[in-house]
Length: 355
Image (cartoon, rainbow, N blue to C red; front, side):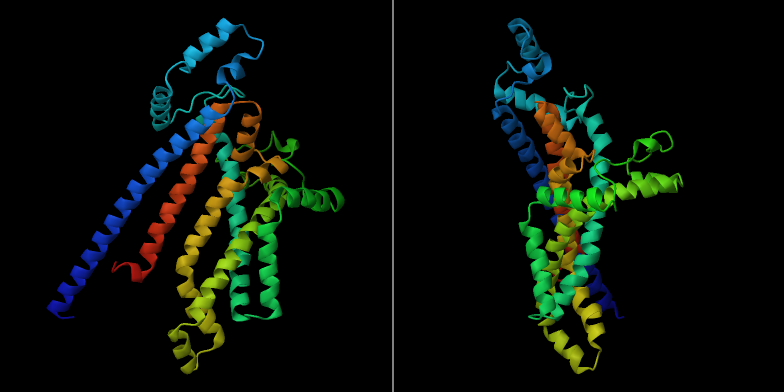
């Protein structure tokens, strides 16, 4: 390579690095603004709800002076904007207050229950991606055929059927009638003294302890709710994969590859899917974020001790500190995954490097 070529390549690399750094800074700024907006919206909605946190603590039959004293201790007698800034300061310090239901700091409860939600969402996303991508590719290749129609109907059902109804049907069929899986919960009580949670991800913890009996038991509990979430993820991923593949199969490089005599398998899986994989990464990331925030009903139906069930129980007991804290954590994770997927898209797609 000649000296001018080296200089040009260096300038291109420097320009791409500068563009990527600018994009990263912009995304961080957007993330900060979105995070502050999320806290504001969550806080004010929590204050609009006709639930008095002071009454939730002391009870409805407490004397008026006791309720008023608790309101002063909580700062509920202050103007709303002062309450917000106090709450914002606490959130930035990682302090969401104490839970009325468990009497523990909300962040401590979230650290305890969030791994269960992540484990369930991760398992569901893996199922959705492993089956959704091949089905989407097959539907695009067989466009207009009976296979394409079946895949599209599968996706349509996944978008249309309420997840709580399908969850109850799955429990009746696979647990109550057939006995193929375990029922609600996460692990049998008999393993309480032989299994020790380490990371909070029970499957991983069972492998680390080489407790294979506990692993099989945990797997029998997670497979049904994870498959249910995986089906809804599959519906989204297969639909988007089909759309991306149809777009790639119409490109000129596909015609050129066929003219060169390349096999259809290599064209589809080695060229078309490879180019479609860049936006597909974003789709899978957003699907994962959606399962993290949308597993509330699934966790409620299956009594899965995750963040969704924690928020539901807290809301039923007027535990607004826990509800607001859990909502903010879920929203923050969703925004973070969204922004990271955008950055990853820019890093993987060469066409964005010149922008």
